[in-house]
Length: 426
Image 1 (cartoon, rainbow, N blue to C red):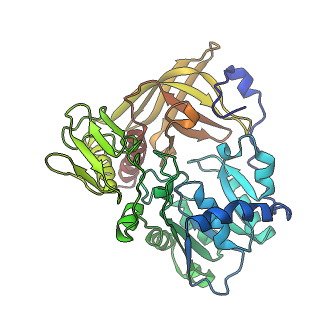
Image 2: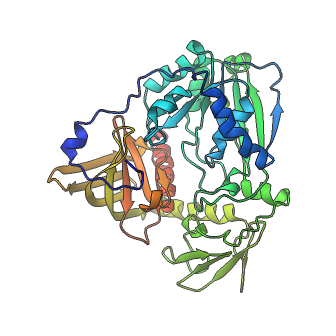
Image 3: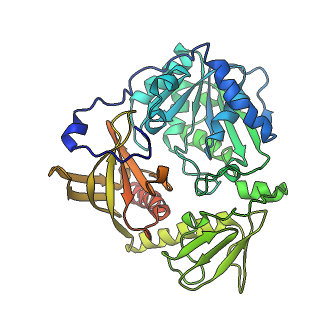
């Protein structure tokens, strides 16, 4: 099945399908595939003049936990070069196995469903570290960064580190978002940097509390690709460098409209008030007339988050949209079940609908069940979608409303989770 295909199936047909095996222990990479992985990774990292800076890494050998930031598929290529000549086991979302499960497992990957707690993952990581004696590579942001800045990290990281008591290394790529942003997947020419840092050893972990471990990880997980670009004077001369930017900068700071931002060439504008911005070769924004509210793209992005936070705090936050519903039971691909109206508010996700085959379909996902949600822009030509998982399935929701911005629902899930968590702990 092609990822671009829309394949309809009844709920009963999907229910009867085998589930992706999340209990299979991670394999050691096949010896004959490891050189293939190197050959697939090294040329592009050399083409981008990627520099890998290693801090406190001398003498460190597997097993250890490698925590990597996530901006594009290039991350995996850079990480493969950074850990050379050592192999690794890689935690990969189930959708990463579509049409290639066997080869993915044979290069050392094992699966997880995004943004959901699953005790089986502990056994997988344990096997990687102590049975395979490998590096276990984890992308804790669980999705590509939307804006080239640090995304939300799960609190469970500290508990995991405390449990296994093996060295922890961070691998932070700079420039990967600029090279291929999620809102415009065309590759750009940009020089990249990776910083690989041994941040904790066994003795440190034994002394530190879970909260202190999380603070240490967060401290070493800070990045801003647009600041990196500006500080290193890295020019992107692609004439279409702003195309897709309205996907993440969906709210106009001049008039407040959330449905009218558009982009083309090197321009970003609002169809409602006609305010226009130019994106220069250093990715700085400048209004063609009047005040430039935000020249730094992440500042605009975080302002949008603060606007959603205000809605949550005031009790006015509520999003609803009619969506097409896809199910991902295994690595064979997605199956369309039907459609329905999805609501997200302070209580979580809610849907009650009748599927194409006449089956009632109900979702009541409480706010604390998801600290984040996965989103994709124009997923293989099928449109923007957001998704979340159960233990044995992943549901993807494609909005039928072209003015519905999945970036806002991403903010909404995170801010609602924070609000409800604070209220619960008060």
